[in-house]
Length: 275
Image (cartoon, rainbow, N blue to C red):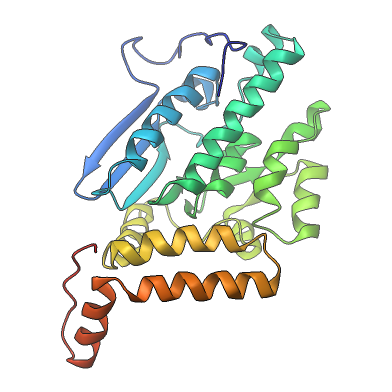
């Protein structure tokens, strides 16, 4: 996307200027991307979005990576867009380019072959809540809170509504969007915004349990499954079944499926090759 209308945001005031806005950590087949601007509550500034896009694009091309975790430093997961930056650039062209840049970053999460998990501690508001909803899965500490709070400053969270309304039921999503009120982690779990809740002390263990369950599976099945899942959501029922039948037939041709079925019949662990 052309970002010529976007101007760099102010540096993250909480960190050494040489510190990256997004910290990348690689551990075997898992990559953690940590938002690293805690004093600005990890706001999705132009620079933060650019940094995230760069990392996501790089990861998407690396078939050795199976899972991506999006985490954050500080007391907040992400407070949404940088409101000071938005007010400093009141032109419509800037606003449109900013929201398009953010939308492209959210779409990159859905389109990349890896499974993306949000690890949420603290607040996730507006576009920060959108980021949680855009991830394939989400785990949260029991101190996490979620809101689409733009309505409180006169701005309906239209772009967050796209992701949130695809996670929650229609009435629950609209209540969040139209009231701006916070929901706690257990309510977010009940309403479908997140997958698991744990105490702060147990959050890493809970996250690792989910990662281990995913990485134990064939990479062929994971990549096929994620692509199929999102593609079929907007199809009619008949179209979805036709598409799913074709995908499953192609999936059956994979070496990993033959290995998996043989291993099941022979009552032994499967040895995945990724083919």
